Image 1 (spheres, rainbow, N blue to C red):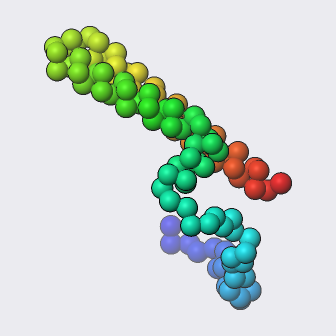
Image 2: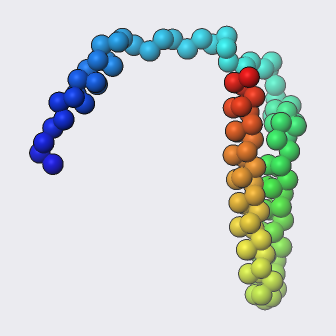
Image 3: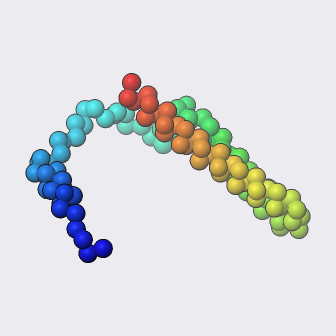
Length: 108
């Protein structure tokens, strides 16, 4: 624990000596005209339609599960809460998949 690695400190010092990172070129970033919420929502939905679908399934399962719980149908309520978790997992996977696809498309 008390031993230091001299080689590691030299690497950090050399990295710092290289200077600051190059400035970010703002022209390389995608720019969109002044778009409102509706236009942005529709653009994002067209880019990855599975995310809104997963969100709707999540909200539907949650709502039906809460209504079943309120009516006293605990078996159906538990089933719907499990369905909600699955729908959330699907939504998360769709989000990650969309991010990966966008990253791959931007590299080409």
